[in-house]
Structure formats: C-alpha cells, structure tokens
Image: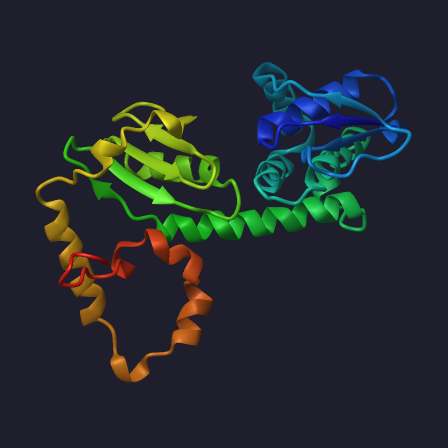
Length: 262
C-alpha cells in the first residue's frame, strides 16, 4: 500500500488525487491521507504530496465535466470538513464516477461507503456555511474597509466568499478566519482572493470609523427592542444560534463595566 500525504486543503486533496491516479500503482494499492499526525501503518510506503494548483484545477475540471455539478459541489464541501477519512473517500468517489457509464449518477450510489461519507460531509459543511451566511457581522474600519472575524468549525471560508462577493460587489471587505489564519479579500468591483491573515494590520483593525460605534449601538438596541422577555427561551435560542457563533456577533458583545472591561 502506498499512502499519499496531502495538504489539509481542497487543493491539497485534489493534487493527491492527481498524483495517486498518475502513479499507475492501481487504485486498490493507494490511499490518501491529510493528517500527518496519524499513526503510521506497517508495510506502507509514504509519499508527500506537494500541492499544485494546476493539478488541482485539472482534477476539478474533469469532475465537473464527467461527474457533473452536484458531484463537484459535494467534493468541494466535503473537503472543507475535518474528517480524516475524507481525502480517501473523495478519491474513491472520483474513481468510481470515472469508471461508470454515466458518471453523473455517482452521487446516487449511497450504498457505497465512500460516496455516502462524502455526501454526509457535504451536508455538514453546507449547514456550517449556510449559518455563517446569516451570522457574519461586518465592522466598518477607519479606512472604509468592511471587516469581519469568524471562527468556523470547518474550512468554509472559500464557500462563503462567493456569497458576499455577489452581494457586496461595490464594497472593499475582508472576512478573517481566525482559527485557520486565512482571509478572503474583496476589492471593490474585482474578484475576491484568499490570503494569509499574517499580513493583516491589527492596529488598523482597532480603529473603527466614526459612525461604526453609533451603528453598533443602534443594532443592539434594535435586537433588544424586538425581544419579548416573557417568551425568553435560552435552550431554544441555542438550538437556532449555538454559543460558538456568538463570539463574533455584534449583538452579543458584552457592554464594558465602569473599569472599561467587558
């Protein structure tokens, strides 16, 4: 068995699929993994996969043409999850689809454990991304840029960015995934890109625009005014809006006390 170690990202997994297929070792003799900390197996040869955007693009193009849009979307969403089995499951699903007469039917082969896992992970990542589409809160900085910080459980930032790029085309905005140290940057009227968050100017992030604090208070007041205290149900609220999302939401920011602490 030859194990291909991939970078823990969509491009990394797709490059691993390309290298595993191109190795001509036989699909039953190769395996993909993304977690370098996983326990090593006996009688296995390990190969490190260098992420290559060109190879990844070729695999995605083939998936789109031969397996269809639904499989393409499922693979992108599943790759965003943290399950250590996903890289090999995605590879097996691609192999199965390419060997079918009609590859677009591969998403319906739920009796296959690899396809079933990919479709299950797709649903989990979709729910995470869908929630953040409503939970993201932007803050206007002194320089006019809209900034938002998020801490998603899965790597859904590339799935979120197209949504906000479509809705805020004429705005300069940044969505910062604090957990993974990456950010989506969208210049006004241009395409969005992923970048390393290490280049962020954190001094600038601490300088909101003149109107920002006023609008924050207005938003908090609005949220309080529509609440009905007699119908307050924390358990129900947590089911719809789990606690882990609230750290980056304006309406849940704590008011500073007399000492200035929150």
